[in-house]
Image (cartoon, rainbow, N blue to C red):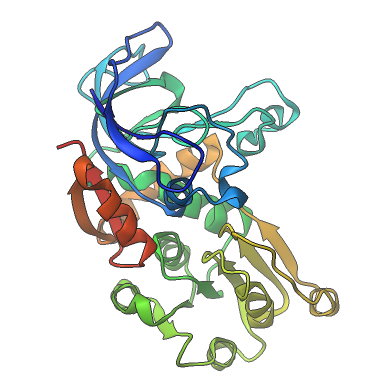
Amino acid sequence: MKAIAKLRPEPGAMAVIDLPEPVASPDRVLLRIQAGGICGTDVAIWKWHEAVVGQYAPSFPLIVGHEFAGQVIAGGTGRVKVGDIVAVNPQIACGKCHYCGLGRPTLCEDRKLMGGRINGGWTEVVSVPEQNLYPLPEGVDASVAPLLEPLSVATHAVLERVPVRAGDVVAIIGAGPIGLLCAVLALHAGASKVLITGIGADTARLELARQLGAIPLDSEREDAVAAVRRLQRDGADVVFETSGAAVTLEQAIAMTRRGGAVGLIGLCHGPSQILSTPVVLRELALIGSRGYNETTWALMMRTLPAVESAVRRLVTHELPYADFETALSLVQSRTGGKIILRPH
């Protein structure tokens, strides 16, 4: 079978290679992959940014891709059955450590992310533990399935880690897919206003944000802090930082009202520096949000029917595996919204 694999721990060094298909086993299910998505982590693996890939320590060749969905072709004991279209939680936790015991497997001491530390889903057939599969709710279009992993990241941030409440003013830094999904969920949660910032290269993404009901802002042309304070005098109730840019953390703090919260989602590739005094004097909460837990996926699936149509609008490009470098370059250059890879 064909698979997109990282061959060596260095920039580039990715190729479409041939590998044997996995075989069925009692506790695992075989999926025929229909599509996969690309996120900034995949670009970091391609470019080999140590600040991101250092957490994974993979062996090589590594099949890349942690956003993927497919059809069950073998296995299943009741949670799924042959023929089901399923989304995949690619996080494999040990189930034994302190954090797994707390119901927080995203903090697992032996966390294995498919496509990061162990083989992922940019291939044709993949073997996945059955408990990591989620059939789509009845009536939901199958095309949304490869978008559910990033939607779960946004769900963990917006509905679990830093919950948005009805009437809140919300600001989102970064107009990439995670930022846009955070906007969709914040509006669904009842936020009165959602402002989302980007830069000049994000023109199309900011226009999509406007169409989805958010207030777009080009931070290269306008002062984001002043814009937020026009919406609410003291600042936003909640700010989500999704860009991973070192310079935006101080901006996020300045955008937040007294007693408000900053949700940190983006992964920064280098050191960042902030003044802690405003955090103390204004009693701000800085809250990290990483990945998702099983509770997140269950919550997301209950939320999905209400936001499905908005989520599917993020897809702007679909490319075959053979063009994976073009697809990764589109993400790196901030071109379009969600980029989808298909086996053929």
